[in-house]
Image (cartoon, rainbow, N blue to C red; front, side, top):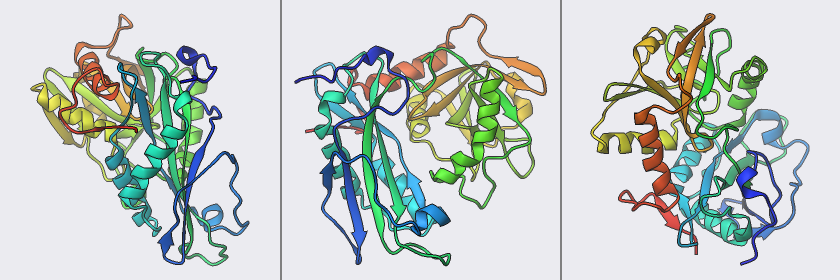
Length: 339
């Protein structure tokens, strides 16, 4: 196989052109057959519902090259189901799981030369998305939809990889509120968080840590990922109806329990943070990223002093990534080989 001429070990987490994307259209009550295309743009009506009323949802998952040279996907069905939940909440046409799976396999196979080599530190990132394309001026759901997946090879989301990151508690800006759409993956949530994230990055932090919108005292999640903290042999991760249910978190919770850890999914008060020994962020892009410190009202709550991840965070990371990369057996049925 001819590999794409890229510096895979030094890729940023950024868009890189590949050969193909795949598209399915929903019209007159049915989905079309998937079309692989090299076209990089989308032709939609200027009055498309997605542009004016926000009917847009998306996903993120990864393909990995295994030690034996085969390529595998991680938790395709969970991503498909989460896209369906997102679509239903915005009154969009859900993409059937079988179409989602077919699309993921076909687009990865078509872009095989862009899958980073095993152990390069890079992966092939898949971005599935669904948009409402009907032309409307009144506020109403679209009748027609485009489901599409493009892929791009990426390096770690946080530039330093497994190196611990710094977070800042955000008390003035809220990402989402109870009863809203914080629990689905729609573009508006990320647009709303940019002003907090960009400000934090200018001040030397990797991300912000959002609080609940109702009481402003419970941790929701980071701007790009879910959050967890460890005390002794107990892992605590926030429970909130405003949090996007991370598939990485779902996986780590299972792994932690199988390690003999106690897992608590519950409201996590901000004033509890100093009592924990380790903390981290969870997400498809972030994988498991250890937290060095969290700044709250000018004071630092420190979890890492020597620059190295804590023992429990590191073990969780190693177990998860070994399954994702095909280095370890997958007892959960989370992975699928791309044919």
